[in-house]
Length: 323
Image (cartoon, rainbow, N blue to C red):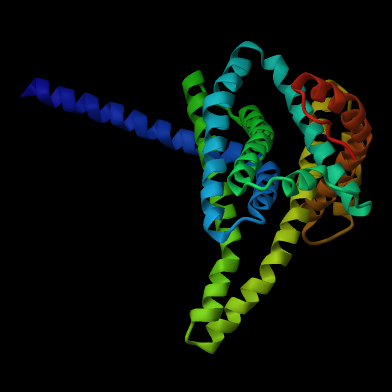
């Protein structure tokens, strides 16, 4: 009996340690996940475009395919690489973060330039030439998973840099929790967004109450505006996050500008108000980070489209992306 009691006591002690570890992982994951907010917003804002033009019955299955690809990107491909970098080449994390930030700046600036100076979109023209809906769906899913890989790499790298864990297993578990939670949150939100117009249409046609029918019609009218707003928010988030990442990377390499100037301007703006100084400081910092990201992105457009694009096209055998 005493042996059994001792065993139960040991099991209880192990369970207590495990519960503490779970709490620590959850807390660390929440902290690290918060650092990725801008990229997560962009991920959620970008994804709905991949189901536009498909039958409503195919929207959720397409999102599920993309979500599965996102899980694979984060947990199977990126997690092991991130752990190897963190434990054997930590010096590479900052340059990789900056590279990802530069990509976000480029993507955001490209969207801004396209909205200011509309031009033919090669991707849309390619879609129009595909007659087979199933083939088009697979092409869209592959394209979405490729885009997700870049954003997932950024999310995992930012999270890794924010994680403070006592050992490699806790670090890996926290990163896995962040990756899974972000994927569920993003694609769950996207599924809700793309189905809201269908919900509104059902309410408008089937509800017995006039108030519910009016609400349904309002949802149908509101959804295009919401998708447009998400596109704008996603572009702003790209530029804000990309610019901020590059600034912090430059600081790590002992280059204080433009981060120092942005901090001085944000502090000055905060000092001019008596209420909400912290909010004003954050808003000014985010806005100036976005302006810096836009400048970096505009400078990168000719490099990406005229130098890197043709090189990648030559290596892959695909047509270069251009303007």
